[in-house]
Length: 166
Image (cartoon, rainbow, N blue to C red; front, side):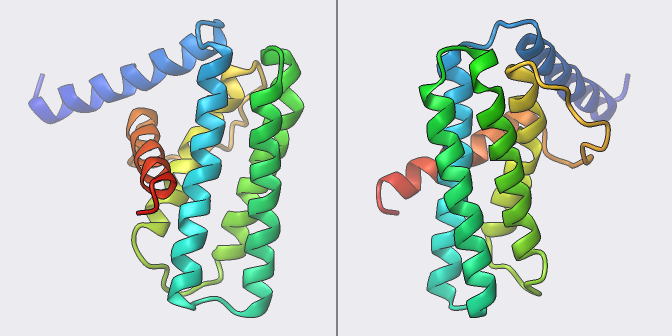
């Protein structure tokens, strides 16, 4: 096999294994709560970057803030869930909030880095999170160049930087 094909195959198998592990219940409650928190905090970092850049109209800012509030509330509910089944409604709300935030920002012509990367990473992690709590993953999940592991690393890094005031 060619090196590029081997790397692509390894990434695909790794992603498939991770998602299968989530479906098979080997992801712990703390793990999917951490994923939800990293998504919410990563999006909060993106929102902070956008506020500093003064790039959004008042209407876009309101839409973004409403969506972010929904994501943060859902993330908190995931953290409080007793088990994966109990987390399902909160994960569904988190998915809706992320989708609302992406929709609100899709009209902004030029988003500064790292905002597009954070939005893409959150979008990649949604099906993983859905699968980890036993929700059906929509067939329309978008293909992207990021693997779930890369997306997770981006969100965790942005969340850590945001928490530490950076």
